[in-house]
Image 1: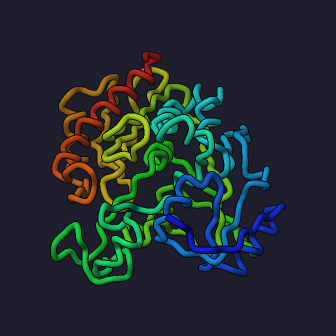
Image 2 (image 1 turned 30 degrees about the vertical axis):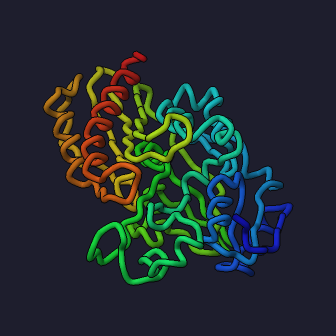
Image 3 (image 1 turned 180 degrees about the vertical axis):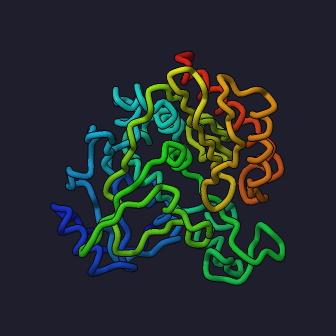
Length: 331
């Protein structure tokens, strides 16, 4: 499949990149690793006039400690995160998620920002231009119907990024920069909840950093994923969890987030921990059922929506138990 012609831009500084972004806005798409963008270009799901590369912006790469935070540059590859000593020692769940993305060849070029900001997907949308040309446009293509849900009044495409759920569970934030200002927002605020336009970033904004607060001493985390094939597929369901205990071993805080369960990751409601050293099966089962209730799964992926929704409860239980073992220093 041939791409539509475009003008290639390669800024040498962040300032230059932000000026290019400001000047071209909706006519421009950003490429870093390219593992998300290139397939969309080949399918002609996007037809930008300009492609701006971040390749020469060295300030957008690397992992460093800054006070009580870990700063990850937006163009840092998933392989670099997986191999980082500080990430392995403090953020096991994030490393789990990076290793779960596709295969090593992809991890070597895919970036953390690219994985975070990918578009939502649907079997009826992610098709070639030839296939789409014979069908009436759906909501995601500015049409007036949903092919996945008969009579559906909105887009049911699914956000399938691996890193967003675990970053939300770790209370991560991102820095967004544009020509005349910057702002910092939580990762959860990046998502609109709208499958048609799932990412809340203005056309002149560039995500430059991911900011992780250093976790408390007794912290455990995990990421669990369902996919058809073990090396290349997007998650069909996923669950991330982070738990903390105090110096006495009592569990004092935790967060569970499910992914591939709608147009954005979803934080699962949990009851109070009640100063417990262990979470009993009834508590974990309740969290899993809460995840089942808020999951939004329809038949627009490789496996049926009803099956994926049931599997989410299994992944939530696995993620919680794995986090608790990690918190206690187990494997």
